[in-house]
Structure formats: structure tokens, C-alpha cells
Length: 542
Image 1 (spheres, helix red, strand yellow):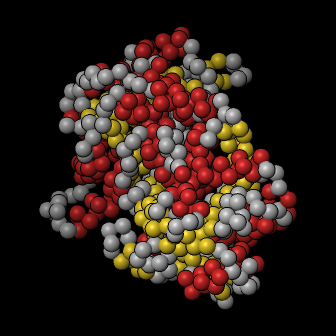
Image 2 (spheres, rainbow, N blue to C red):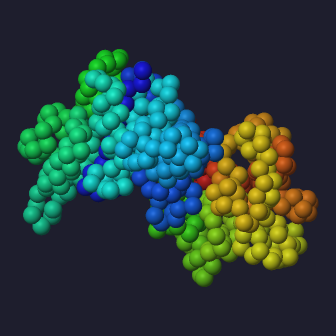
């Protein structure tokens, strides 16, 4: 039977609940336990796919094509289990499921209510996501006291009651702010937060106290007394310069021991030597490079979370420090490409919408003409394709129908038919639901031999997708004749997966239609990002 650890948050959001939960999962996994993770999101959107990055940050994509919360990216980076659709659900999905059941008459005419119907549905979803694991760590989004997350908290309370003794544990993450004017840490918000939790019948076994500094023992004793939690259960989580230090920080204070005690298990001791090695590699680089990331959400780095982590992982595996500078593509549009001259490599990430696109096209041209290593991801590949079509293939009006529906030379367009991971043919048009018009999830494609892509990946590539527009095959032959190489295509639809410039023309110029950042982990890195960082190192030395 699966045992559960529920991770809740209090006082304010964005304290790092996902990283704390993933770090605990990493420690438990190192103790030989089979661990999975779930994220429960209290918003009514069915998934985060159509939410603004300004509000939500990055949308993470799983192999089976779910658009999920960015915390699932942390889960995959910290533990070996792969996340699926069942590992993340929202209030919107719960209500949608209950309403469908009600319409089908499954409630036999009963009045459908929050308790028990919504809370039972939440528990069903939790059990479905936790199936097959020894321990399921369930992160509940939002903060205690929010109306939105109350049904989730109530469902967690009910589930822990039904599961019985030693089958459920609660860990609460809270803020202990430092008030500079008073020169002291304030424990009152934490006291209130735990009080709120206790009011709804949840008694945490451990309290993770977030602060910008280590919390002194006397303050921990005070929190312990007021929150009615054993002193060893009050754990200090201070700001770290890398998230990969958090497992060791929590382990040193015995969080896993507290959780194992609460769950009535005694697995083998934790072995965090891998994390120690990673942190050592991060802190002792032999080289240093700076990569210019040309995007439009440059003030909101959460939008590129997986991407920045993937570059850091590549730094670990090449013994180098990777500095990332964000460049606003609209600035390049207005001021030209001079700001790009200082970088060892240029990366153009994915994105949607017309704003800032011409700046990205200029960045791709700058990288191509100046032989600077270039990696284009999703939209980054499409802008490189448009740029090459305009300036090298004689298609002066080349564009994407996403930015100009009336373009006379649509080298990138909305493809109306493709095959999903299950082999089903899906169709779409401009009027389809936004979330239903995506090529989503993992696809496997063959790679053309003797190409840069083959050097990186070998014969095949399996990566995750999240996009609506594709390279238009009608124009690709002409662009290929002008010297651009399409090194991988999808097997059934013949859609462009990877394009590149030959090595004798450019040292490293590659665009990919998928999102490789979703499969990078600190343990293994990712072959594409490692190759990109190596190209940047070579560029710096040249």
C-alpha cells in the first residue's frame, strides 16, 4: 500500500514548496524507496497551457503530452520517476470530471456537493497518480487559508484518516521573515499559518521554515512551543545559491527521519554522494562562458525555468560555469544586434505571439553571419528558418502565419493534421481550442547520418513537443537547396524536427522543433545542451 506525504504551504506563495518536496523525495529515493510525486493546483483552468507566463511561469510537458505545472520539472530533475498526466491536476479538472459523472447519472440523482463528491474525486485522482509507488509526495498548491485550496486540504485530511496510522504524514512550509528595522526574525506569521492548518484538522509532523538566513535555536524552540511541533521537527531552510544544495540541507536536519518515523518505516540510510558531487562541480568550474538568451519574457525568468536549469546541468557536465544573460528581443528590434557581440553563444527559446519576433530573426542572422554558436528551440528554430529563407533562399517575404496570416510565403504554417503518441491522427484549424491545437508530448524520429544532430544524438531522437506551427514542407526543399540541412523529420507526417548548417559552413548552428530542456537532469545532463556549451567554450577560446 502506498504511503502519503502531503506538503502544504503557508503565509505567502513562491517559497519553494516544489523544490522542498522534490528534495525530500530525492532523500527518500536515496534510501531505496520507490517515490512518486503529485502536484495539486487550486486554480479552475483545466491545465496551465493557456495561462500567461507572467502569472504562471513555465508550462512543463510530460512524455504523454500533459501540459503541467512547472514544479513537475523539479520533480523529474530530483527523482528518477517520470511524471505523467496523472501527476498533476487542477480544481478545473476535478469539477469537469464530477460534472461529467453527474450528467451521466452516476450520482443517481443525489445532490452533488463539495463534501463528499468533490473531496472523494480529489482522493480518487490522488490514488490514481500514486499507484505503484511506495511513497507518494503530494504537493498542495496555494497557501493555507485560501478559499481555493480548502477542498484539497480537506481531501488530504480525509485521505490520511482513511489511510490509517503510519500511512500519511504532513509537512508544512512557511515563512519566517527578517524585519530589518527591528533587526530580528518574526515567528508570528508561522504561528498563524500552523494555527490555520490545525483548525482544519491537519497536524504537521515537520515545519520547514523559509528564511534568508539560518534560524537560531531559540527561535526554533519558540516556534516549536507555539506550533505544537517537536523541536527537531522545526527545520530551517535558508536561501541557497543553488537548489541542488537543498536535499543535503534537509537531510542534515533529519527531515527524512521524521517523515520515516511518521510513516512507520525504517529504510536504509540516505546516500547523497551524487548531490555532493553535483554541488562540487557547480562550485568549482574550470571554465566560464556567457550565453545570450534572446526572448520576450526576460524579466520573468520563471518562464524559462527548465531551460536555465538545463544549461546549468550542461555546465556541471563540462566543468564550466554557464552565465545566462537575458536580452529583450524588442530591444534588438529597436537598437540592432550590437548587444550580442559579447556572448560566447546565442540561444533563442520558444514562445508564442508576434511581439519581439523580428528581434529574434535578427539575432539568428547575427549568429549565422558571425559564426557564433546558435541554438534555436521551437520558435527559435522557426525564426532561424524564416531568417535563412529571407536572406539565403531568395524568399524575401518569408514569414510564419502565426505572425502574418496573409504572408505570401508562409515558410512556417499551421499544420492541420498529425499523429499523436498513441498513433491517433489528430486534426486542427484556427478555430480549434487553443489547448487542443498543439503537437504535445514525446515523439521519436530518425536522424540523417553524418550531421551535427547525428553527432549529438546518434541514429534517433525522442523529445517532447509543445507547439502549434510547423515548418512548411512546400518551401523546405527550396531552403534546403540554399544550404540549410533538415537533419530529422517525423516518420509519419514528414515534419521538420531538426535543422542545421553544415559544419564546414558554421561551427554550431542548430534549431530544434521540440523542447529538449524538459528532459535534462542534473544527474545526466542533456546531449544537446552539453554539445552547445562545448561549442560556446570552443568559441571563447578561438
